[in-house]
Image (cartoon, rainbow, N blue to C red; front, side, top):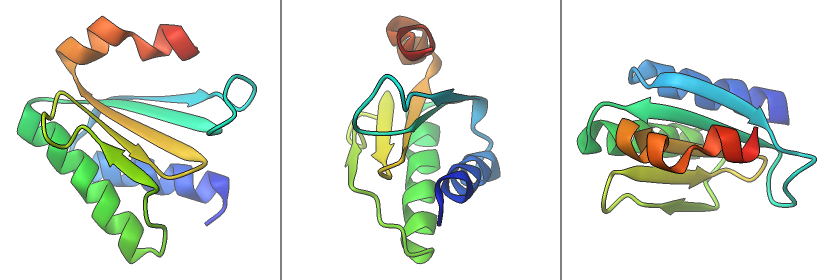
Length: 105
């Protein structure tokens, strides 16, 4: 998958499990590790983990295994690193606290 296909794929998989408030940040000029950060919200710890797991499972099936997954244990904020695209799935409280959109936007 090229970059745009990967980004569209991840957004689709987040939407499949009703992830909310998806933000697409182009960080290519600000980060040496990724080109795009996708941020979305889940309604509960279980929902956050389910969204992230869906992206991981579907990506593996599509031949794009994640480089790393962080935060699955707690479910407040799960990060899925797919190389050119990094997905942050967060509960509203964590999202409000860390304000990644302002930090990277």
